[in-house]
Image (cartoon, rainbow, N blue to C red; front, side, top):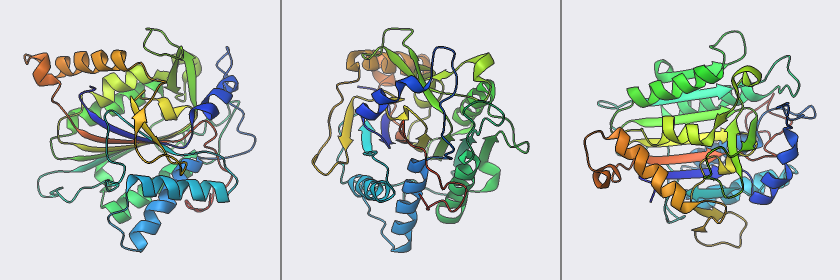
Length: 328
């Protein structure tokens, strides 16, 4: 199996992903946001988390979170069906946790990399991704206890470091280098996502899912393969990592082999038939072996950070991100 314990929440299902392929054409133009701003997945998840915090519910499960997200999205007119994907079979009734009870602030740190791209002045400009980052930052600080000095923000707002391809990759690499066993990590991306023809044969559908940086026209996309190599597999063991990737096509950005769909009909995880499981297995083993230099591949395969990846979907765009974080 993939050496890391990865969990990812997506705001979409496969049919929605397929229906949105035409949004990015051969000239790599950005999708037309139709005057909309930000990510419905970010807002829905924050509302679920704030509601659970307000009622003192520390045992809210993965399935509870997904179903509450679906209800919120449905009430606001969005048809996404949230799903949980994982690198291994898990119990969907386990608690949804960002900072575990075992975290010791005396020895460890909570770290975050938060990215918001509005693509100002470009075709397909957004207007709410900065607000998404501000809202996530506020939640992490006020509810989870993150500190400003351990939060890295990339935004194209003229006040933060611009989220270029090289800056995003550098931020992820620096995060991996700084993170130690026992730390808590949170990554958030709000911006455009895309698909490119698979360049190494590891995608059954023939496409790599991507993040679209500010300078994509010059530097290109960040492929899912890149994210696995620079962020996921090198992360130290016994790290609790949560990622919220709120963009088009982020539902399959890690190609995880198991999934649970929060549609009310599913009761457990199942194999994700969109994933090349064999390719994921050997990719994970080879990267882990490189990280744990000098150890046997069998030892490297035991490196297992606790990682929770949350993602938005191809239609994860909402009109109200310019206001309150929970007003989807």
